[in-house]
Image (cartoon, rainbow, N blue to C red; front, top):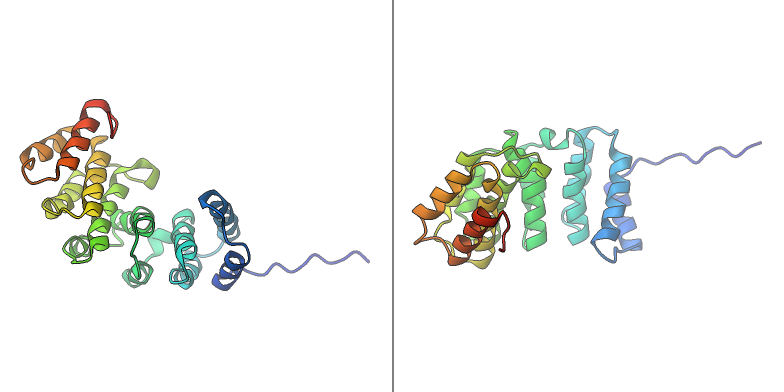
Length: 222
């Protein structure tokens, strides 16, 4: 008799963690190959199941955290199914550049754009004593303006958050300010130019330099 095909076991957070521990990724391309495989397995699953798996990964190390965020971003319907409680859980432990930027661009920013996350939460992050939360607030605006993240331009929201952090000189925040304004140039050059001119004395020199270069050449560095 022919052998019966093995029963396919549904993917779980524990299964993903076991594979990450058994075969730790050497680099980002190697990790993303794994993540794409897991996303393919989860493509037909309900959004809430994908969110539950992500919540089971987020506190289990850098690769697991990034996996959690990309699994949600890559699943049709998962971002729309997020609630404020899930977003807060996914945001716990943010304390470095890669995780903050991935969370802002893939989770919090898109959730803000579709109305799952309110502006009040973003403003609270902008006023936080934690440098990573302040950077996060600015990174969230990138998802409003970068087409790859579903952005179609939002001058009002972007400049409102930038306005809260004009005087911040933390290097991580300054770099995010430049990124946020440069991302908006695609949609509203005039507004970015006016904002930079109006606040030239308060914005960090790096921001003025990079934004003006973007306006002039279309690139960050001329």
